[in-house]
Structures are given as structure tokens and as C-alpha cells.
Image (cartoon, rainbow, N blue to C red; front, top):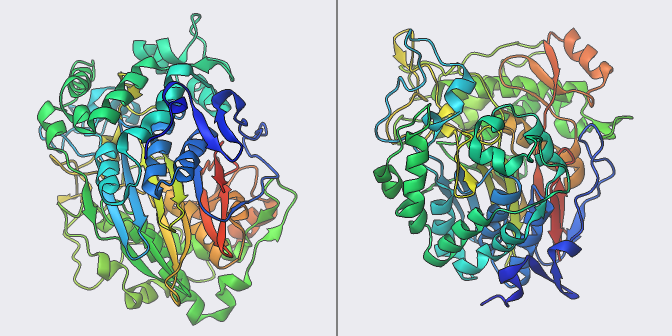
Length: 596
């Protein structure tokens, strides 16, 4: 099916009342000064739904669904618009993990960036052998991995796309040419980034003539990106991985003061991979997530498996009997102290195993089945007591050895998530990223390049043992991205699609939302908005401004070292609701769920 001409020159989306163009679209709901949008309600639909981190992206996804497109068609349109309107978080210069449900099976598409062939494990070590400061490693060509998102989207589209590839770029091309309003979030992130001024291409795009960040509502056009999209739309991803675009990428990476190792051959040889998803039970549900090189699927399943074992052993720990309580915070709800204690302790155990065992399974033997075995998780659950363990040690699942050293890299935050369900009931959960805000700060032909090589361990060895997630040529760095699909174990029916940005905190955000949806029977908007909490196997983190003093006091009494902190998740959730769907978007960002 071809789209009518209105989509070529401007963003005009097919609504029930006819074509609606960009200047008629509703703006994002107003944000509070704190960044938390109160009063959001779940969105309901009977046929299809799209949810993304920016309203313009959600509109583009819904337009594809209205035109009879599949969930992957919607995802491609949303990703291209996000490349334009949310460049700090994701885009064609980055990578992605995609989970896809075609009504019969779940597939995992790996578009994670890969290390160039010329790198060594000393990539991020200084001359004295100590690790570089993060910003030194991030800014410039050194941190750039081979982008994978376009290859992954094309691989999934070849199997499940219904609309022509070229039509899926039309909304983003229209917006890039005619302009879009700078959002509050984009303005705030530009204003808070001291490195943009040092990048001529970024400065000329994101700053005004006086060197100040463009004001909220300023119309921003990106003709260079429009031209890039037109080429990819007409010729497919090959034009990105070879030829003029590839040459521009390599030139930018290799000629920066902090030069990297990316080559034209690296780009030409990159392939997205189809992998076996990681699925396992939690009570009445089957949870499916991404396998390595993402740690998201395994670590979420480990957390839930440990919690289920702990609940079986002690019924008073049943999370279903510990629903959130009402508060006066903007969120209106808060998890009970005992629930936070149990979830944080389970996450400590899971994160300890993550650091020890998880990496790119093409390079390191990852004992996925052993790590998610119910007997092993029950043995881990027995370590949870009434008092916090503060820091867990890795376990030793059957068949695994400890020949590798744990990864002690600092855990960082980043990224974007989108979900979609189409008229046929096919569904997608996709988490996509350029890593840190604005990636490597290298801008090429209208888009930003990732800094995902900094997701490797900077330190290649610990006490003479190699770190599983060390840098190696062609290897894909470990990720915490956790796109997740939920099914009924009884009927096999799809229950939900969800995920979040947030770097190494993603796993905790997804755990919280899953428990909110499944144990506490919250609607998608409540589950997304529930105050964040958890542990990455250090302190216990609670969301500053939303965690009550009473919660913090009780956790401290149980031995938790509590750290209130900003926890800016970006959850998108689509959940089955009767014969249709219900959607929620994280109130901490500007996303929306839209459906018909």
C-alpha cells in the first residue's frame, strides 16, 4: 500500500476525521517543574496501539497502524521520528533490541552495536594502565561502535512488514524538512550539556547565534537528516552501511581529536542477528525478554524467579498481598517497605550474577539456562532475610565456572523504548539507544553517533582473570536493555508489551512495572508512574521527591543504605484490556500511548 502525497512534504497523519498535519497535532501534556506529569490516565483502544517517548513518534506509529501496517511498520516509523525529535536518546546512529510476537512465536532481533575489528582490550586504559574518566572515553570517535538499528529493523521488516519500507520514513522526512517544536526535555538536556558547544555541527544545530540552547517551542529543521532518510527509504539500509553515508561516518570517527577505530569494512560486514528469546515463568505468567548480549531478559527473570521462590517459602512475603499505599506525592502511590525490601534484595542477587556471567554469548559461554533454573533461583532466594545483605556475591549455577572476573564498571543510565500492537494482534517491544545523552557527540548527516563501546568494561582483567564484558574485536557490549513481552501461561495469550530507558537501572524499572501490573493489578499508567526503587547490588535506590520519609526510615532500620536519587525512567506499556488494549506512558518524560 502507498501513502497519499500529503505525507511526502509534511507530517500529515490519517485520523478518523481525515488527514491531520503537524501544526494541528496536540502537544505533549504539560510537565510539572519536577518533570513528573501528574493526573495522566491510561489510554484505551480496541484495534491497535503505539507508544513512544515523544508524541510525534507515537502519532507516526499510529498512522502506520491505521494504514494497515504491522507492529514492525509502526516501530520503524517511530524510530525514525525519534532520531529527529529525541536525538539525545536513540537514532539510526545507535543500536536496538527488538522482541516480536507474530501470534505464534516470540523472536528476538539483535541490533546491538559491535566493536570495530581494530580495537584491543586496552581501548579505554590510560598510559599508566588505569581506566579513562568516562567523559574522556565518551566524547569523540573512540567510543563509537558499528550502528545496528537499521539492520535489525530491516531484518524484522522482511519477515513481518506489511507496508513498503520507503513509506515508513515519510513522517520523519516531513518533520525533518518542515520542522518540529523543540520539547522541554530536549531543551533541558541541551542546556545541561557542556560538550555541545565544542562540537561545531551540534552547536550550529542545537544552539542559537548567541550560543544559547534553542528555546522550548522553537521550530527546528534538519534538512541533512531528511536527505539521509530519503536515501535509506529509497535504497534500504545498504546505503547507510556503504557509500557516501558510511564514508562520512568513518571520516568523522577517525579524524576526531579522540579518534576511533571504525572502518568501512566494519560497517559493510555488520549483520543484525536473530536470537532465541529468554522466557520463563512468574506465577500465572510467562515472561519473555532479550538474551545476551543484553542482560535484561536474564536479570529480570532471575529477579522474578527469586521473588517467587521467596514467596513460596514464606507466604507473608507474597507481593500480591502487599499492594502499594496511597501517598500525597505527585505519584499518588508508593510501594510498601516490605515489598521494596524483598525486590531490592532479589535484585542484588541478580545483579551479582549479571556482573559475573553475562556478556556477548558469541564470545563468552553464558549459562543462561543454569542462571534461570528454578532450583538455583530458590537457593539464591534463601539468602534473603529480614535484614539487608547490603551487597550480594555471585552464585555458582550448575555447569558454570568462575574462570572469569566480575565486571566492576560503574553502572550508567541512558536510552528510549517503544511498544506497538497491530490489528492482527502482533506485538513488539523495542528498546533503542545511542548510550549516553547525545552519544559520542559526533553528528553526521543530521544524526548522532553512539558511544556504546563505553558499555564494555574499561578494565579487561581483575586479579589475573579476564572480565567477561571486556573489549574484543567484533564483540557486542553488555546491555541492560529489557524489552519485555508477557503472556498468560494458561491460554498463551499476549498480556503486555513494555520496557524502559535508564541504562543499568532499566532492569529495576521493568521489574517494578511487571510487579505493578501482575501482582498489584495496577493499570498501565499507574504501573509506569509508580515511584522507582531498587538495587544494582550496592545501595538501595529510591526516587528522590517521591519516596516518603517513612519508607526511607523503615528501609534504614532493616539495614539498607538508602540513596534518594533522580530515577528518570521512560516506561511505555501496552496491556491487554478486555477485547482491546490499554496503554500508559512514563510521567517523567514526554511520551504518550495512542490507539484506535
